[in-house]
Length: 356
Image 1: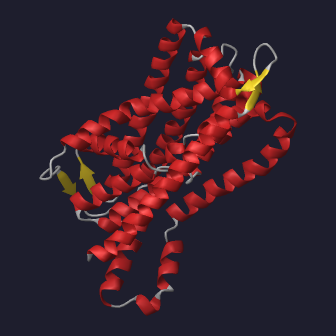
Image 2: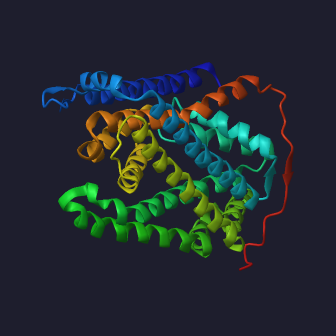
Image 3: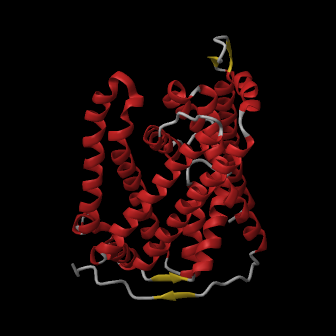
């Protein structure tokens, strides 16, 4: 590859990053300059209201519940690590626990500076493919992981909705009627495709013009990798339950950060339900870096009328930092990982996809 071909790609990445950085800054600016009413009934910008509110936060309450939020969020991160390890094992790729932990934290560290979960997903895929030599299988595990992640998000939404839907006001019933069937349909379709890989096989068989030579071998590996979890239903269901735990812990984190910043009357299920919507918006948004701005805006829109504008914005920001505290450790692992690093990896044959 020549320097001339690399340079335009580098320029595009730089421009893309610059646009996302600009949009992130714009979202935060709009959020902090949005006019709100403070406790005295005066109309002030959100930043002024937050600065005036900060001295009212009790330091003991703040640190106790901030640490609780960090602990709960850490449980979600560990669940996510375990889910990735399980799904790789489903493709016959076995890494030691320490490699899973360090690689995951490195991916989270790199993902701090990128939109959505691109950094984490991309680095984990690169790492698993590089050290196992099974690119197709590592990719299949990543695709399934994204799928079970979305399913876990919808499950969290469905479980918190009955107890927290009141934050939606008069339109709560209408929103529930529209969203619940969609969420259930997506969950059913996921399991149908996962447990009936013949759907994917039928699609691959239509690619007859490509089925020759090396391409045929790749397609066969894709087919085998996609069907691998059919014989591992318990593993796949376990991964879905871990995904639910990941998102539920994240939603619970925002409840504890709300208490930490003085929202004493915050209701667990209302904050949890609002946070599931906010998490979905943050994960699906490709426009800002690490969801900054989007997170606080959605949380303020859903919870300001319940716990206050200042508290909703601060709790969202604190929730982000509760998650990023362990992420910073990934930076040290990233810097300390030498070029000749090679983890212990065991490669096993795929489980018979035809076994039920």
